[in-house]
Image 1 (cartoon, rainbow, N blue to C red):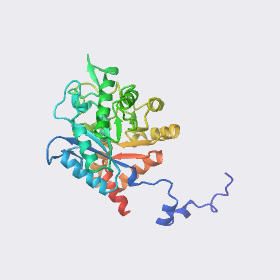
Image 2: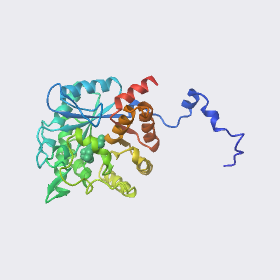
Image 3: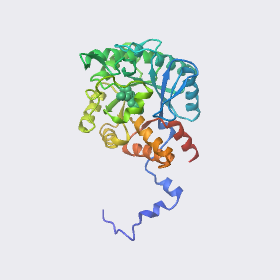
Image 4: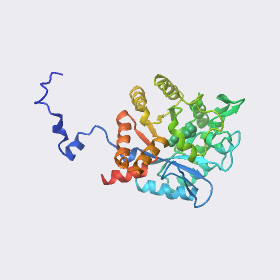
Length: 328
Ligand code: PBG
């Protein structure tokens, strides 16, 4: 660049007013990019708060419908559904039961609010007595036998009307198995949003309280990725795309912006960033102490994810963000 530099060049010229700053902003946050996670369990009028996540609740189907109605009114296009079953076992029966909690709620939402996109989390940990994301034998998490259960789960979600299925288990080959089962059942058009680069993260702590899915022994390091590995994340994403993933996710988000950037740059697929429970909890806690400005920090964090390359933003703050974007 053959620039004369200062004083001819003054970058501050383009920062002089709000309108000018808006005109030259490279990245936008928009309500149409938001996805709100919701946690369903059976019951009526149940709205059970979670200590580690202010503003997040376990909700019965009627309350989910109320919440989802607000989501629609605010213009948030999608929810991500998790289920907490009445009973857990060693084969995650509740995950693929025709009348399982996610299946029930999905049917109800698609009937009452047809324009709301229902994304279902496909995983077994909430439904397993031991809390792991796969079948356990001899203290090990088995890969291949787990695939059948994941595929059945995804197909049962599609059958209930899910718009998108989102496998979050990190078993090898699950996208292929799910795609095959969906196609086999006639759900050719149901897209897969794969949690392709999902790291074994301490930021998931509060989620495990709300989803009641903490592993009863060991940890998830034999299937979720090591935080040290960026190149491996790209290989994981490449494999999921080969197997038929339509969209990919990086999770957590804020501590993994480099991965979001590389995934978007390398593959160009619609890419989701999941601002996970621990990220949300940190902002909430600091804001409650008056140490940070909740709104400003939340918006800045999400903007950073967009700048890194994320298209979809999965966030517990989706409804607040939608309100803030309306007035700003
Ligand atoms: C289930 C799953 C987890 C999250 C999403 N799906 C937890 C885990 O892997 O232990 C975490 C989401 C969050 O922390 O907000 N496999």
